[in-house]
Image 1 (tube, helix red, strand yellow):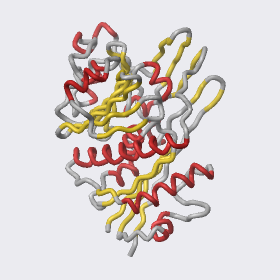
Image 2 (cartoon, rainbow, N blue to C red; image 1 turned 90 degrees about the horizontal axis):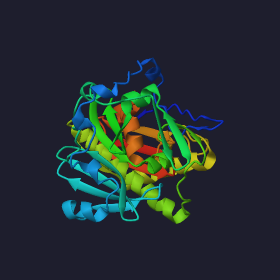
Image 3 (spheres, rainbow, N blue to C red; image 1 turned 30 degrees about the vertical axis):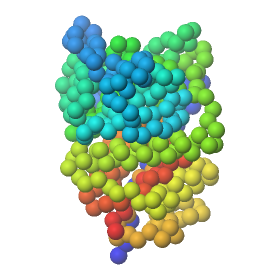
Image 4 (cartoon, rainbow, N blue to C red; image 1 turned 180 degrees about the horizontal axis):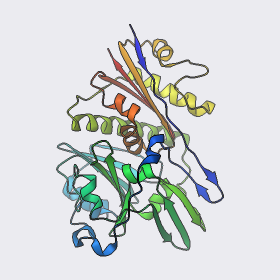
Length: 342
């Protein structure tokens, strides 16, 4: 007997006046969470104000400096934000380096064995919040332009942001266990191009360069790779076996993302192609159990996977021991994961 798990995603997209919201809030009940208090600057420990030869210290540096230490990357692909990703696998850790004009302008780290001082992956949220500034609002200037970003209560608990050495550091937490499971570093200009939080500005809004249809194919494929890597990293982190990528299942996932993007809807059931069971049967997929995660308006494959982790139903699929196959399909800002058990 075929069993299909269905889950639903709440989309909130706000655009009014000079406010542009470009993030999907996943869980209604997050609104009941307490707002964190900002720790006064005088309480900050000195060692949290600077990087100590960590991955964050490479932001703004020539990529050659990084390659001298870490060697050549295992993979390369384009992002949607004017930089190219270089991916490194180091023991149980993954390092993504974003390079624009030979300069490292962003980075992401997940896993153990990589220097991310003054933080430590696996460290508790409580410990981190005792020694760094976490605020509902950040503001900064780029030239004559002024920008302000506001974090929701969900953002504060799942991916708060702080500034160290003129670099923005976004901390990805697993809200269930209150543990740090990923870190993203960004320059201010990259942060504005991505708009991970509700953004207000005066002056000019910096935007990424337009992307050709050919380059979008490369960006989509890169995001799919990120989703696979981070999904299996999170499963392994909790002692769950990796999912095997099924390229036939990829086609089903891609077609659903494409259908949602082209026909301006967001749902597990397509007006033309039916529900998950119908789409799997049409794709000639053999399965005993199946589930699906969808999302929209996230900045990339890293961001969306942590979004799924911190949404109860999506997390159930992502970390389920019952599934052993995964299909992934990305079309611009529409993301689909298909899970099956043979």
